[in-house]
Length: 260
Length: 380
Ligand SMILES: Cc1cc2nc3c(=O)[nH]c(=O)nc-3n(C[C@H](O)[C@H](O)[C@H](O)COP(=O)(O)OP(=O)(O)OC[C@H]3O[C@@H](n4cnc5c(N)ncnc54)[C@H](O)[C@@H]3O)c2cc1C
Ligand SMILES: Cc1cc2nc3c(=O)[nH]c(=O)nc-3n(C[C@H](O)[C@H](O)[C@H](O)COP(=O)(O)OP(=O)(O)OC[C@H]3O[C@@H](n4cnc5c(N)ncnc54)[C@H](O)[C@@H]3O)c2cc1C
Image (cartoon, rainbow over the protein chains, first blue to last red):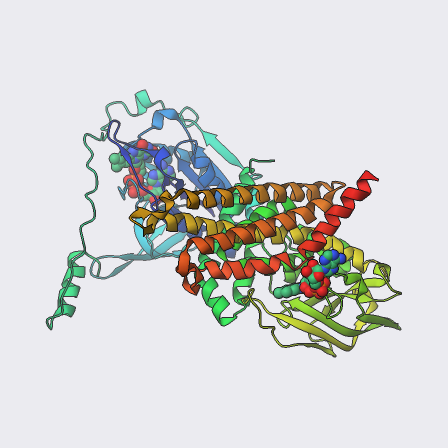
């Protein structure tokens, strides 16, 4: 079983996250770059399968700037067997269309039985890359899984809907994305950290993947950031005074915010 | 020497994750309730903290002393007491791994490296502290066994540990008459005193270890008969720089708290940080701690490379780092005013914890003795 985990490097959500209004790009120098937490959980799904199936192979794959090396090394320290980094300056500011094309090409190059991604990133938040990757690879996507079972030829799990749960399954090869319902990732151990540098680490350019942007993306739509607006300063919270129906009001408030 | 390697950065990150999630949120409560969190130590073992510089064939992490000082500084930011206990445990593991034969290493190190079992270092006695070579606990040969009698004082982890490395007299007076013997918990005749009531280090037990005709096979001895004092002192070189690093971590944490506090607290219509005398206090704390960090890393490097002046460098690093860190932590308490004295802020705990680092693993007077003697002897 070869599992490829898609990991994206994002600005740490603890810090201030800044968009550069001139370019419409995320100012990546403005905050610490870390692996998106949801992608660490995706890696944990793969690693816990590997714990029980020693012959499984786990690859971490990321497309991003040179800084991604650190995140991929952390993935190796946690227990992934190898890392693939798609690095090419032509990809700066890639949108979901480009990103999914490039990831699909890289996955074709590495080969896979199962691809595991996060449901949506904390920076772009498109929530579409895994499905688009699956579409381009011609394999089934099952997204937003809240639980995952992997067997030799099938992946299954539960997918939450507003009203209930769907049990879904797909034959392998397939692409899945997972939600925060899945467990937090393990800590890297000292031994993992020290062996990470000895594990295979492949850097691929667009040329290596046989992609010439001028040809591959010619005439393809491209999202461009026209305008950015700063998040408004946090308004003061809403106070509910109990006049006998505070419980109902609280529940209404939470329902309106899709929190329950 | 000054830049960390990529691996060292990752090791420190991993320790930070562990210390901030598994230790820091509980440190005050463990101190107040005198709780020794053996379950959390097991998690520390999973990370690789149980045998930091033990070899990998017996489950150790195979890291260097230079890595270890970075690790202990970061760990102590979460809980100084637990970090210091982990240092003592590692000293025991290293002694067995280094001076034990292969059979002994494979028997004792793996469960210690995973911290499923804990270790204690038994040198001090009621009447032999700084002058440890005057110890009187005896191990008398009887066939293939030693019969041990005596009392060890101030033993960290005692009662919770599974493995006791005991320095006992197998020969005549002085350091050459001492051997290092591994005594497993549960051996008949082995018992423990009450948990001492202490100023700090409350989250780990300190007890007497009492030997009443404790019969131990001769093949539990590490190295040759008469080498025990040498083994014990070798262990302390690394122990001392770890204690320095634990002090540094606690003090650095206290300094960081003080900086935040002075940037928020107002008096006489100004933020406290705008008062130059307080700013200078912060500057002095920072400078002293950076100097301690430099000296600790130099001593760790000396230990890694087996430099000729290693004993003296470890002693001066321990002396300087534990003194500078205690002074800085105490200054952080002062800068917090009355709040610094409250348990909730965690600062007074660090001050209490760091105080004992100036006393144990060789008092700071003994450190001066080592440095001074080496200086004078070298000049001769
Ligand atoms: C205003 C704005 C500015 C931006 N600026 C930049 C920029 O300067 N530089 C830049 O690189 N991006 C930038 N982006 C991000 C980029 O356009 C998309 O976010 C990116 O193509 C992925 O889409 P997503 O984050 O919405 O993915 P989602 O669909 O939300 O991601 C879901 C999952 O797909 C996987 N995945 C997504 N992207 C990658 C990846 N690159 N490698 C591996 N796995 C991945 C992960 O598993 C992730 O959890 C910007 C986005 C916006 C909205
Ligand atoms: C909380 C705690 C935990 C401990 N854990 C352990 C442990 O796990 N294992 C272990 O073996 N021991 C342990 N110890 C013991 C510790 O190492 C000793 O307390 C220390 O070595 C000092 O010995 P002492 O208390 O007998 O003081 P003494 O040796 O009696 O010293 C009293 C004073 O005299 C000074 N002094 C003594 N000789 C000289 C000299 N020649 N020149 C100048 N000044 C001198 C000392 O510096 C000190 O200030 C622990 C102690 C404490 C408090």
